[in-house]
Structure formats: C-alpha cells, structure tokens
Image 1 (cartoon, one colour):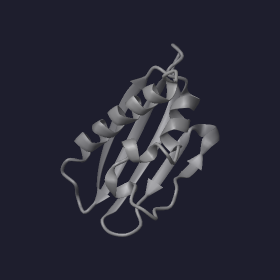
Image 2: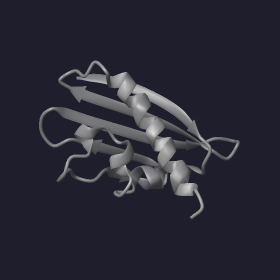
Image 3: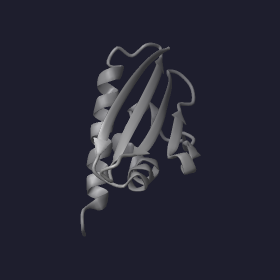
Length: 113
C-alpha cells in the first residue's frame, strides 16, 4: 500500500467545503476514479469534525481521507490522504489534482445563479 498527502487552502467556509466534498452529486467531479465507481458505498462521515473517508470495494484497493479545518481568515484548509494498493506511482499528483478539482467545485457551488 502506498500513501500520498496533499493540502490546500480554499476561500470558503469549512462547512461549505465539507458539504461540497461529500455531496453525492459533486463527488464524481473531484474524487479519484477508483473511489467513485457505480455501486460504491458512500463515505464514512464524522460531520461534526468535518472528516470523511471513502473506500473502494474490491481490487485495486483505494481509500481517501478528507479533513477540513477552519482558518482564521474565514476560509478552510483541506487535507487529503490517498492510499492505493497495488502501488500507484502517480498518487501524489492524483491527490493534488483531486484537491484542485474540489476547489473548483466549491467555487461553482458558491457562484450565484
């Protein structure tokens, strides 16, 4: 099993970031493909702590842990930890791309209209 971590600041309230990340209609826009296949179980949520975890069902085995934390300026810090087995050599890049996609989803979620 190989693991990668990524962190990103997002200019939105932590609850908005978390709700966007865990929205079933938005997950496919940011979560890595092995974790968003049809028939996958939903995330394990610890909503009060703004934490979520996704696990793939089967092989290859993937998991993602998301933690959203408030920052003093009113935004949020998002930490994503991905694990894959067998080893995925692009995992650090996939983690960074996933958070960039999540940031775009949050922006879309906040856009008027």
